[in-house]
Length: 288
Image 1 (tube, rainbow, N blue to C red):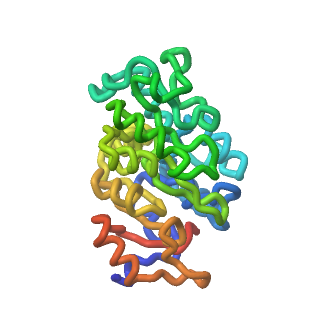
Image 2 (cartoon, rainbow, N blue to C red):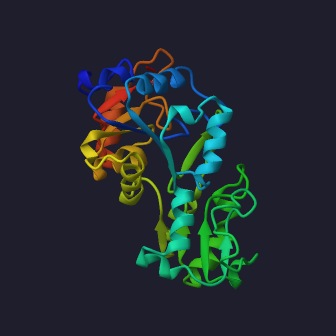
Image 3 (tube, one colour):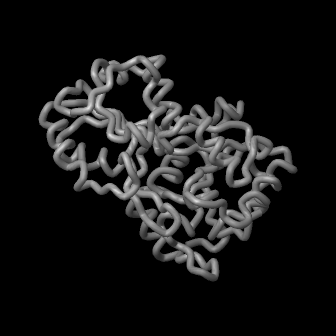
């Protein structure tokens, strides 16, 4: 790993870009509380007049994520906009600007109706409690955090056998809740695809959500933006594809930084080669 891409803080590149797009879970907080140094880093960018957005694969609406950020001390003065997979899913189901969305009509079975009640537009679709009564599947993730793939295996098999299309509102496969790792919608989607089911994902690493960030921040040139996140498969790969610069938080989902803040360069290089993603910059944790 080239030493020069390992930064001591975000100020090292603060003058090089106009817009900064941050992942949420694993980058600015652990599902329970904000990481040390994050708010100071956001204030440093604000002081320099930089535009900031959050781009999350959360299946929740942006307003829900905004409330969560405010609860951990990141209020609206720290950023210019929020884009979420859930918000984009809701918008696409309402507006149907993507021809792919024509697959998702009729009766819908939701994997997480109680945990993620706002992903589906209100009063638009008939919701059914049994997958064998559905015309399509809205996969926002498990209905409760402790659930596993095994809890959904039978339903996924039924859906795939019936040829039901699945709309995945969170391409992430796993997430840390404090120190515990839980599955996300992406894990259910991967299993569904392996069973032969059709999956349409919305979120990182796919182009559309990065385009939305450019719209929100009013920055036309993707090379003037940097994506900051902890996941090579979503944050960094998506940034590479969209033409954004990419900054990896090494202490996140891949656990590439030790307690002293040292980054495991050989393991990072190996993961990048394996996943086809490349971080332009690396920080052990997000600090100014």
